[in-house]
Image 1 (cartoon, one colour):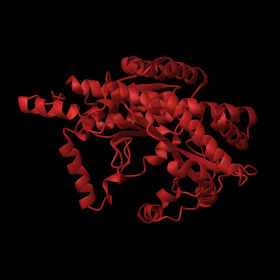
Image 2: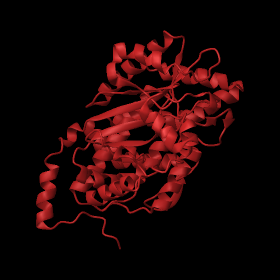
Image 3: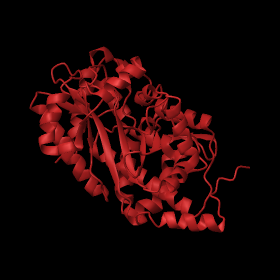
Image 4: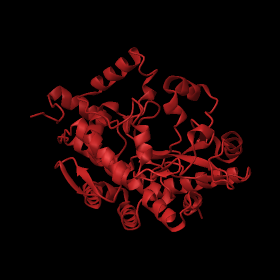
Length: 392
């Protein structure tokens, strides 16, 4: 039987408590949201390589909160550090409106979904910056086909030693976040049969996938050093797991999700992610054991979430059973409820979760539009509308 609790010699207890004292108050876990968007030609509804003028215009209002992505038909925004979901929502409203307004000056639109319904990789231009050109040189066709868009949630946990243990607890819940955020059913003009085809495309990168269990920060850092030493990665920022310790910020970054169609869904996702990590942080402080799910089963659980979203059975990794997706989401909500209530987020998050369970995630709603219209251009129009629907 593997002992998954932290060691507790007197010296270790003293060290751990000293490190925990460096943490922010649990009532004030800060967080931030990063979203990636598509730039759309309103006539063809295809992706449009207008990032350079659009970003130049957007920066006049948004500053460095808007950035380039790997393709010139994509754009990324990042909120400042937030303390509440309401604050995060205000920033997302500001940022989405800013890039929508900037794009409109060049007769373009902004769309927030994990994939474009029909744009082909061959029409996408790599952003002419060294970081992206290097990715194309190293990864070739995988990089050229990287027309996928995600949402990344950073949660402030500055102590990396504690962060590793938090990740050990949180890793079994990431598939639920993927299922509820999935918004990429179409790819190159085809219904893929997946709710999140983005995640299957992303899984081709060798540094991707759910994180493994780490016994210590030293083991984690040893792996990163080995990957750099063997030229598998150039530096630790090139680790692209579904959850990782950020090398740029004192945070844990959850990066498993598709970008959400609406702002309210993105805020729901951020609230769930923060509450999950806060819940797991409390378990670390209490020296509670984490569930040592096998990596092979974890990968299959993520695949099922990508394939079926909320419309079939997902894998409950704690019981090693297949359960209805809604049941697993409800189990996650019950598990993180104390943290959601502590932050004052329970009502807002559960109300939006119930709406998604009732109306469908972004993938299901896109399919519904296509079934009514039988035109993927109508799906693009729907995504554009949803991207701006919560902006007032």
